[in-house]
Length: 220
Image (cartoon, rainbow, N blue to C red; front, side, top):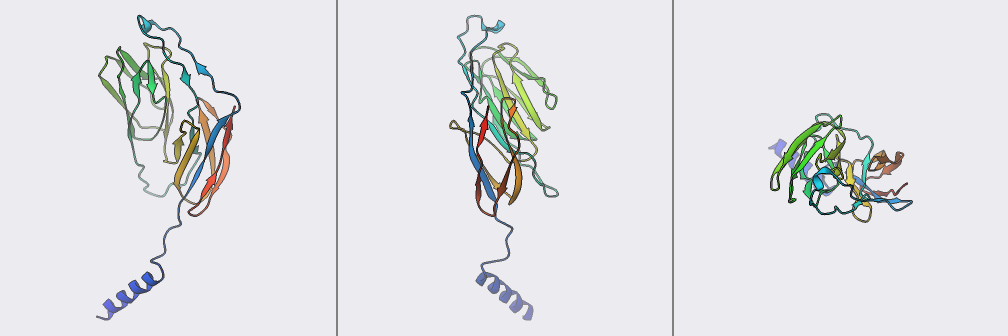
């Protein structure tokens, strides 16, 4: 009975004090990636597989990835994986840029009206799904971090990027170039903005308890 009263009094005291001590609140880094000059819109280049095909649309290269260069990982940390898709439509990969965590799977459905192929020669994640017809889907699991450049061997103008991270602190910019990385433990980090093989110099950003930090990038 005495033990129960002691436990009850402890619970009441914690309730009056606002509860047990909590871990520090997490924060966020947000901002915008801009370019000092308009990003090039790459025109279609003829390929062997273009017989009777339509002219592919120009490529918008403004989509960027912003990420923390390194982050502390607690012991026995389990990274959440994803299952995403990169479509093949109108002789383009859509989206053109994906950012995923290690161990995630990406589907490559062929939503076009012709055969496509999906392959990569990237050192970290080399693969070749072969050629497959409309309506079919190939899938790849990405087990190593790194930048994976994706191609179609039938249509030489088709290419895309998949950035594979061993942490979850990254974001792909929206149409206006804005990003938001949340749930970051308080601390100081190096942040990098990447766009089609071009990476900014690391920028230092301090994340306060439960607050957010603004950090903009200018890429040339």
